[in-house]
Image (cartoon, rainbow, N blue to C red; front, side, top):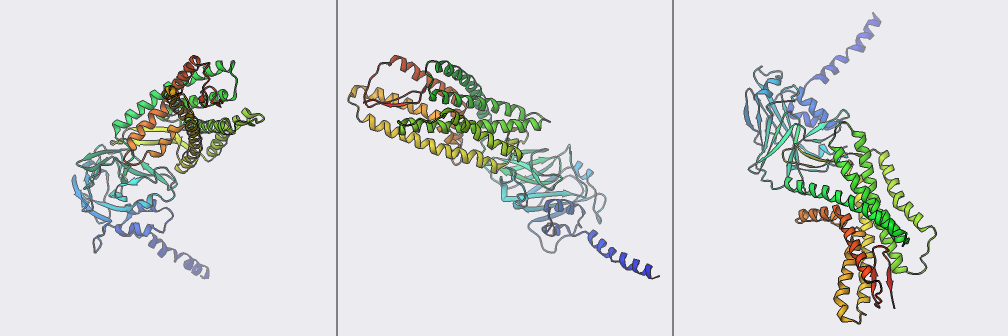
Length: 503
C-alpha cells in the first residue's frame, strides 16, 4: 500500500502541469506569450493555429480577427485589406467553437525587429514598408499551393519607391529569410497588392536604390556586352605585352600583364557566375564560382594598388629604387593577399547565390554566385576597395601636381595646347590603370544614383576596351615622336608607366 501511495503522489502532479501546458491561450495574446521563447517566430506560427478565437475587450491596433464563410474582401481597418478565396476556405479547417461553414481569419501585425534577430542574411537589413510584418492565418490548417491566391492590399501606401511582396521562410533551425516564392507584386494606384498561394508572415520589401525593371535589363546587357569585349581586348593586350616584352622587358610591362590577366579572369568569372547562378541543384558549383569571382575582384584591386605603388617609386623616389626580387615580391602580394582572404572566407562558408534584384512581379531574379553574407562583403570588398582607391587617388594627385609644375616651365607657347592634350590623355589612361572608375561604387546612393550606376557599369564593364584603346593611341604617338627632346615635360608611357624629367 505504501508503494502504491508513493506512486500516486509521484504521478498525480503531472496531470495539472500537462493540462496547463495544453491549455490554449487567446489568439491576441500569442505574440506576447512567445516573446520569452528562444524561437519567437516559430512559437507564434504554432500558437496561432492552436489558440482560442476570443475577442479582446478593447481593440488592439496590432491584432484583427473575424470569421469568414465565403469568398470576400476583408477590411482589417489597420491599413490592410485581405481578399480570401473560396479555395482557401475549403482547404482550411475550423477551430473549436466555430461552425463547420466558417473559419477564423487572424491577422497579427508584428514589428520588423523580430525578423532580424539571429539572421545575418543580406536581406535582414532591408527596408520594410511601414516597418511592419503582416502575419495571416486562416483556421488551424497550413494553407499552401493555392490555385486561387489570397490577395493582400497595403492601402494608402503612395509609394514611388520600388517594392516587392515577400514572405518569411522559416527553416528547420528556426531561422529564416525573405522569399518571393509563390507571391506576385502589383502596384495599383500607389498601393501594393500581394497575390500569394500560401499564408505566412508577409511584408513589402522596399529598396529605393534599385532602379526600374527596364533599367535593370539595360544595365545587364551593358555588363554582359562590356565583359565579353573586355575579355577579348584584355587577352589581346596580354599577347601584345608579351610580344613587346622581348624588346622592352622592364618591370612596368610585366606589372601591366598581371593587371590585364586579373581583369581577364574577373570578367570571365563574372559571366560564368551569372550563368551558373541561374541553374538548379548546383549549389557547390555556385559556391566555387562565388569564391573565384571574389578572388578575381580582390586580385584586380590589389594589382591596381601595385600600379599605384610602382608609380610612386618611379615618380617620387626616382633614384635608389632597386629592390631585390622586386617582381617576385609584387606577385606574392598581388596574388597571395586575395588567395589568403578567400581561403578564410571559404572556410566560413559565406559563398552562394546572391539575388541583388527582384522585379515587381517577383517572378524574375538576377542572381549571382557571390558572397551571401553582407558583413563579409562590406569588409573584404567595400573596405578593401576604399583603401586602394585612397592610395591611388593620392598617387594620381601627385602626378597632376608634377605635371602642373613642369608645364609652367614650358617655353614654346605654340606647343602648349598639344602638350596639354597629351597630358590629359595620359591622365585618363592612368585613371583606368589605377581603377579610378571603381570610385563610382561609393556614389550609388542619393538622387544621382541611377546616373552613377550607368556610368559605373559602362566604365568598369568596358575597362579592358578603354585601356586597350589608350594603349594603342600612345603607342602610335610614341612611334611618330621617337626623337622628341622637349625640356621640362613629363612623358607618360603605358608600356612602362615611367615618368622621366629631362633637363
